[in-house]
Image (cartoon, rainbow, N blue to C red; front, side, top):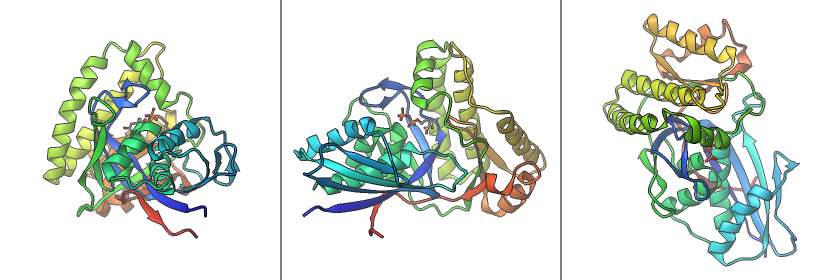
Length: 324
Ligand code: DP6
């Protein structure tokens, strides 16, 4: 009998960024990172192993996908479970249609849980985080909800995420300004490696990221929103400065990204506290407090269309769900 398991994992946005690997095969990062898991954007993935299959089969949003990367990941699961059959994998990305927050984080976190269960494994959450990490670094953090830290470690065993606060009792939210849903020009994998190899500022980034991490953890503990936002925004800008200092230099900013950032700065000058962060793409994510979100959205609407603006809150960690 073929057993099917379905898991749901949410995407996460880093406030202290992961940007560089010390081991590319194991995906061990150069620095610890810290993220917020979001409620609105998630991936549901269904996995079953089937002895009649001649190779893994992978469908994303009902469309057949190439399986090279997935098979490498599934090989890790097969090795752990001493299994040699292939798997049927169906993934649905629940990200509002314009968002293009193509999320390897939610994808590999959901796959880690569904695939390990379907293979008969009972992995602990640290073990799920280690496994998800092998698919995509940021996926290690989507195992948990709320604020999560990925501890870099020094080998496969010691590199995994830990929860900082899973259930936030804090009126935080994140507004996503969707600038462009097109596929990014430079993948994070390629971008971060180019930075390590060519940016003269990389050693300074590592030192700074360490300081930013301990400062933001203190700000979170003290519920100091302005301090947390300032540290997150500055950390993101330092990451993007690395990209501009690489050779060849590159940037993920689009003109509209900069407009969104300037609008946030203008709102701040008017006493509405909000802060931005950007990842390996042009979308701008704005951290704010719930009580200010409608005023901020109203102002963003003067420049961006309604369907470019998405509102999210803190979300939960990975879990199994009933198959629909
Ligand atoms: C800018 O986790 O996508 O979003 O490990 O190569 O798959 P790989 O990279 P990925 O990189 C995420 C980079 C980032 C910052 C972050 O999420 O910490």
